Image 1 (cartoon, rainbow, N blue to C red):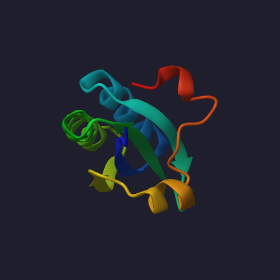
Image 2 (tube, helix red, strand yellow; image 1 turned 180 degrees about the horizontal axis):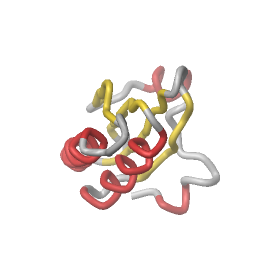
Image 3 (spheres, rainbow, N blue to C red; image 1 turned 180 degrees about the vertical axis):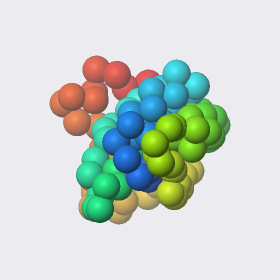
Image 4 (cartoon, rainbow, N blue to C red; image 1 turned 120 degrees about the vertical axis):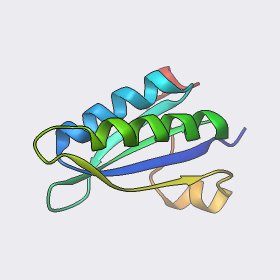
Length: 103
């Protein structure tokens, strides 16, 4: 089963952490990680069924934008049906650390 991918980019680590927490609580999704982008930006990646990822991204955006001290969501995107090519090329797969939490 191909799981959809949801990504939120934030400015500030507290916003990323808050978004990740809200995302896994709001939908039946697996957190793949919080990764460093550049200049204080991070991105949070989750996977799961399309409707669950949509619900999780919406919750993550709301919480990240409400984070104090200039934390905010700067961008987001959902890939509803990723192709095998995306799976094979981009680092958006389940890892040994995330596998126990796979939905």
